[in-house]
Image 1: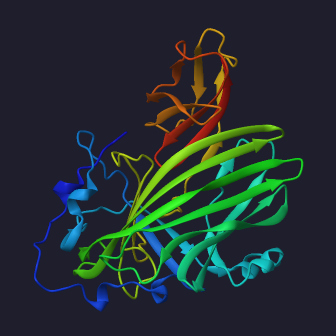
Image 2 (image 1 turned 180 degrees about the vertical axis):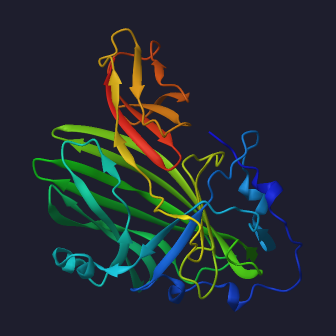
Length: 356
């Protein structure tokens, strides 16, 4: 996996004697609202092969973060609509509102189209939460409210506030079809404040830096088969008061924060770029031979996934083996049984269950 030397690319400021101001405190008024059309850009390849990331080096007070060197490559748009504006079948989810997340699942024995994520702002306690998912399965629009909403933020967000913790749970199962069960917890803390520059914000803007650590398990259900896949996801977001979208957003799919899986930033419309939406893809993969009687199996991975990691889990969710950029898996040392193989390439994930 390509790596990116963040500490060499930031211009770090010095600590000053003045305290954090109201301009650096984020409230519910700074979240997206219905009707927002928020444009973001992504660089083509912002990574460096030889170094690792340690974002803890840039935490703290009165820091200057400079991302102005980033070169745009592609753009996407998040348009926020109420649930009933998306489809009247989702009217029970109102007043939640959200955006199209992209056709994310392929290779299943059923079709999945037009997935949406819906959010809501609560007043007691003041918070911003992911409250529902919705998608069209085999031509039928279906809404899935979270049984426990995923609270992104408790307000106000300010440096020095204790870490917030919350659980979440979502059941996206359909009769006779299956689906996905998700659950876990989120830890969120403001780890820095200061100013930021990006290709869009060319002059320094007051901001806070938020770190969210998500521990979860995605369980794919097909018929009577259950395939759990535990994961750790870490997000860094630079938020500016008065803006409804992160000025910069970094995503990791590993707890060591050694590989940047996603990298986007708030932007304006660019006519010289491909107007595409950068969204994660979830794919059901093939492996052969399966069962892997000899202990060796080969993965069929999308050609576009040039760099990837492979994690093999037993049916209790315990990590049994790890491979990097290897389609031929040597599992001779593992006991006979069932295993779930998870392939991660950037923000994309692929799954296949194998027998040994």
